[in-house]
Image 1 (cartoon, helix red, strand yellow):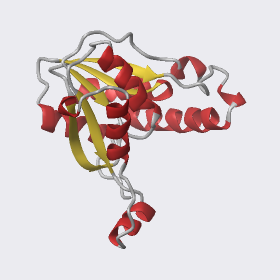
Image 2 (cartoon, one colour; image 1 turned 90 degrees about the vertical axis):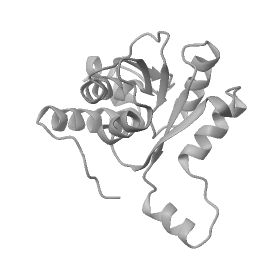
Image 3 (cartoon, rainbow, N blue to C red; image 1 turned 180 degrees about the horizontal axis):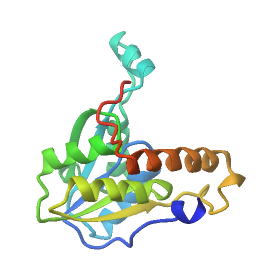
Image 4 (cartoon, rainbow, N blue to C red; image 1 turned 180 degrees about the vertical axis):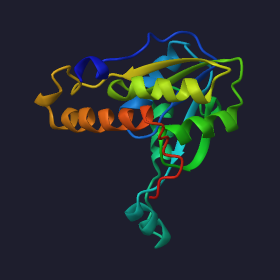
Length: 182
């Protein structure tokens, strides 16, 4: 599993920098890439809200959404709000993120750099390349001090290794998580 998890492309100048939902290390890495002039636009996903968060919001409890926190991290790290764009609404899988980005940005014929976690980069690249067939897709994994090819030494990496392996097997078997219930 270790070789499978250890994957990331080198960042290259792109038309879009797409930040996948799910990890607050990603907007920090996106800000660094933006400041290095890798891409002029940063795109953030609006992911599905976990039931408890959605219920709290329904009751009027102020609860920031993930994309709001991601935007705030980007702005605090020097990315102007005018360079930040959003895509999707209630997105619940990598496949749906790719479809939502394609619908919102229309990146055909463009260069797209997708930012995720290192352990997720290989599968995410397969998915985005399939969905964005008319675009040049590169994948970059955000730095993670827990990441280690010896995945069994860290609880978070054990979880990521097992889950990512199962999700990749599901993808290879033809699954794509088109509709995932909250």
